[in-house]
Length: 444
Image (cartoon, rainbow, N blue to C red; front, side):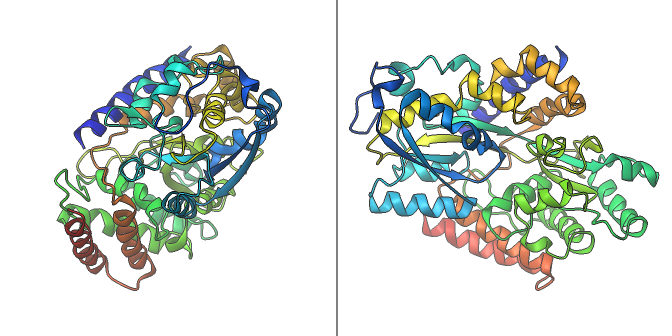
């Protein structure tokens, strides 16, 4: 826990500084090669990806990689839970189906403890292609993709929490942009009366661990943590009860009818389509919401970093990278793919052609292209608040345990039940406490 926390604090410091500058002006069978990009011509690699906007560049620009290397790439994209299940099945059966996989920072303790991922340090030192400039990747981001000092993934996503609101709608009704959880609740109540055809608030409510960041990030503002550093759960703590009562109220009374089943894609679509007035989620959605090709609310979005009763900012911590699987028979080709994904070439095109303004590449964030893009596309406000979101990100409230998926599923399933009204918040948290205690006892 302490090591991971320090790494992530380092992450937000280094990345925020670079973004502010921009806004203001092996264990496998192969030996790391020295060969060029065509050394693996004719090989095929299979890539298992978790769906999300950060993979758009891979899908869009993949022909560039295949043309440059002669490597054939087969992509498979699933929701987060399914992608994890696919990887687990492949790794436990040792079939070697996948060569590259998405690796969320919260899964790394589980994946590395099970021996599913290839350490990348030997490749980074011995097989660096001109595509890769290590200095472009924030050092803290690399640390967040490391366990016990070993690097296991190259990060292609760095995310903090952000509160989104329809600036035009709130202004029309004289509602100030919310900066506290109490103000969010008050705004939701006012909007329900003033805009009966619009959903006042939206967030993730689905019953899988992919919703955990929303709920723990919200609870962090109340001074609540789900798991302490000794593996003890605190689901029924009074501060957690206060936080979840407010969150469930927002989702149940002021959210859409399907609030209890919303994943990140569905929640984001409700806001980008203009059907929702406020949303709490990741800073990554800013790129989507300000893109007229993807959003009906581009140019109408405002941003805040609200605090809870304890004065702490609501947070949504997330980092994701690409890893090489331990069972891959094409590790060097897979490593070349990772280098291409994080290259200046690919990430610059990701900004200029796909409009992604939060690429985790310091060269791009500090470039003239980035500043020009922000001005021309009217996203200066977002690029200014983005580093503040990263700076506020913290790992203090995050359960870094190999049992993360069980922990997350347990808590989110019970919160989802409370949103539907099938159980009271108090009962949902009591059930979570009992199950989490049993999970941790059984894994000691």
